[in-house]
Image 1: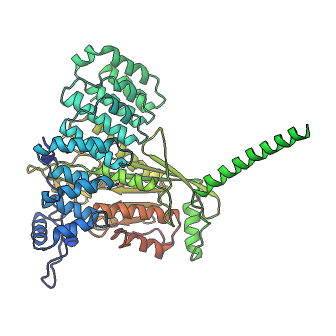
Image 2: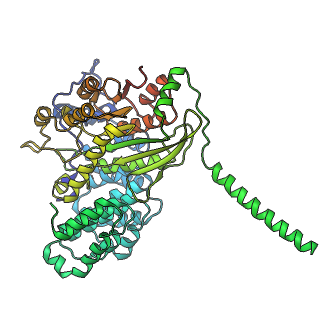
Image 3: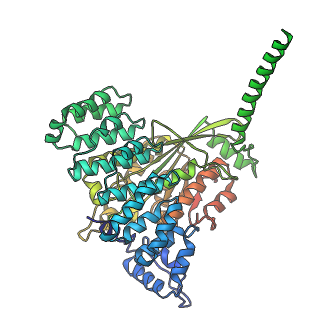
Length: 252
Length: 298
């Protein structure tokens, strides 16, 4: 599974949508066409793409739209039309993009050969205070898919971030390594995340523990039991109940 | 002795001045909102009723925002943008801002406002996601996804009876929604819309809940594609007195986000009908397309 497979398009088929024909036969503006990507039929979407390709200064319009109210529409067009030659503008722009959406488009455009370079940039952005939480979550998800190791110090720092979604996305990345890729590192962090102040992250931790292969749990019994000893007395009833269920091995 | 006494007095004065200055500076950073002036008495009565309790419960539930046939799932990202907007420092008259996050519940945000009677009200807003990751294929295999789906679904349905406002931002599933889980797929990998139309897995529980239990809900926002066509009349039938915000057209995700924020701000600033409707159709913020009904009508 690569980033391209994940982010083919933002389109959704919706066969019964009614589309008004252009009364004058003019080519719709790029924003009108961009709105046709979402929730319309495949036929309408294809027509929208054809119309976009007829616009002579489209790339210039799209660059100007980054950071404007048409920001998301511009990003959608760049992704759907696979405008790789705007990648440099996107990489530059993404540094100040508080929405983080430019990272999703970058991820949809890069190829395997670009991943090493992009991952270095992503790690720098992840470490920067001025990068918004929404951008950091997009970056963490992308680094997880690319199989990039965050390093112990960075993981420790991210799991103390004041934004719970950043802590959750870091834990997701750790899950991906432990459970999906069988990379046996970072297990000790579960003793940290089971004590996270947000109950949703303690729940996430317990579901991760429930997914660990039995042989892995046996080989790390002390650590796993430390997690259970912590959540046995959890003040949140959902966490406490799940703790008992995971300990017994009774989770779906 | 006299000199020492004067020094002590000076020291104390400086301490008191410092405390006063700190308090002033802290309060100065908050936008002071005067009690609203209502255009008419019926508008004032609507908000006196809406703010009848000292606490207002708002639930904003982000549905499972897949992009099938692609694997991308976006609700976690949209919710983060939403939360960033709610937690930023207030500027101007928009009050969908200045919220503080709970340390123990990552979905909960709170702020205070002055109610229509000039007294304080606490706003408890929960922003709840449906997905656990950005890959629909991976989410289907993740046991944590089942928990997230149950939690979001329960929050939505419980909100229909006990919250003051519920906002759904997600897919309509061709009228079979709302939906908080990975979609049922057809053989071609796209969403199985005929199945959703036939079985109504998301909508039937709404009707059952609204019909089956007393409800304190005042406003239900359904920010999903063509929600006016799919849901409006059917909800009206079982709950004719419920305020509804729906979209007559397909709705682009950022328009839905902007419109949700505008509707929250309009409630907190107690906009009367004309201003409320205009805020949902504001072209400059792209909050275009959504319509309110049943909230201002007697």
